[in-house]
Length: 195
Image (cartoon, helix red, strand yellow):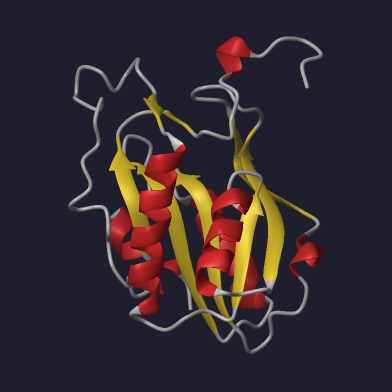
């Protein structure tokens, strides 16, 4: 299965309001998510994913995908949570420079997913290239079924051949701006040596 073959379970973002994301505001104002926003997205994604069967394994994309991956694992009662590191940007700044292709580091951390029903989870999808790379890694590792879930799709950056709702199995919310998650420290407020 390739990303273009993925059958969406549900685009749960259609009825989700995206406050602060008017056309005028999207270029300069990031979408600041609160924990309550994340909990609602997790709930919607979990309900949508369950309609097509509970996964056996959850794979979080390092770093941002680990938080929602663990939250979904708790929601599903799944103890088998894995991680894979694939990056496409060189740092965490707004509109950071991208590498030519997503870069995988230590794909062996995925472990043996042969024959398993896997849900790949990330916090945000921009171009769609990182998620596509992770899905390919999981498929090549022998998973019987691979689905995907993201909290947020930034449609402003989407470059996929298919619309996000056809490429990503479960979407929590759609925006057209940079997103700041509650577990992140905005780059503008980071200081040298801060922990």
